Length: 487
Image (cartoon, rainbow, N blue to C red; front, side):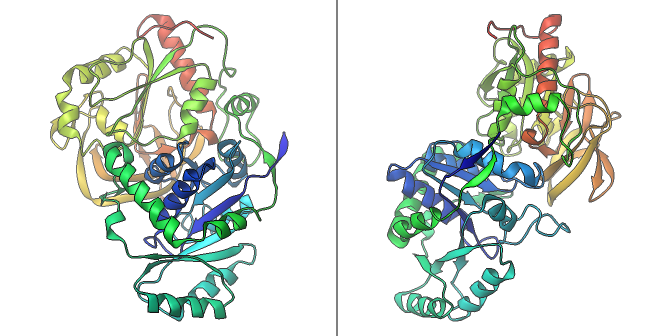
């Protein structure tokens, strides 16, 4: 059902990566939350790490808006779902304002997300090496696409009072409001490594301090009243509000035309009867997950229980399905390897036919070894760190039946890793990539589906229904786990 969404909203964009979008967006979220506003945090694109900082700043789940993986038609409904009941929504962009999926025009760009949300854009400009030229830069971004409404600029890394005066004079000539000026502040910097920022789960106490410092910096340097006023100029957004239960029900009846996903005949949403326990890996080594995954599993009838492979020596009681998402197992390989009881439990679960969905980090954890350290040994493959970064969107088709997808299911996903696994595919691969390159990838073995490909289940809710059905069947057979009471 289409409804009118009236949440004030801003999109925080930049001319390029490294300009300070995360600094400004996270600082704004925290500063407005400190004022008592309920702030809904969002991130354009597939990034998992920034939403962790957004969640810390707002106390609400950080949610992604990815027009490639989920399709443009789901951007507004997912936004409406995440921002329900909030006073303000802040959307952090991805890369440069107009950068999107390679060779696909504006698809998955921050500009496209802003247009789909009818939201004003605030451009964060790294002004450290320019003065009057900033006006030409901003003018170009403001005029490139007339449908993108650039509402103002926040100047980052400004060197001095004199530098600020020159920048303001130039932008005043261009008729562009300056909504904030931030000076260089290395003490607020967040540490990075081979795949970007260090996730919140690995440095929670320091991350809290960083977010508080960002809030202070933004409070001091930005005109919060002007930014809030700009956010309130966003017109009503007429769209359906995404719901996990309704998404499952709609998928059961067939996928709408134009969807990037094909139907896979899932079970009805939330069937009555015992609830299968689906254990989801978390903790510092496995931090990559979209909030909608757990919501869909719950709506499909599962009881979702988190566990930490670094600390827990057994799977949660009654586990009949296992989800191991992305993260940084390469950083924690010695500790993961040292937890022999859990490695044995995961191996036994897989050998008994229990359904396992493993993405990227989960794939590495199921391997025989990672950088020479023994892992779970579920897959006849070994993984290691690499100098090469593998990054980009993928179009894929399931090339075999699995607990996650039926043979022939088409979807879109994303690869992001600096490791390799050899071999790269099992005798029964998980996916065949159709774009931008053609190759098979991943492993299907018994109930195990393991792959480097990250997917967003909101685009294919049938995945959650199918996996929950497999978990229920496994529990019912007595081979693994066992149901808990509930309906």
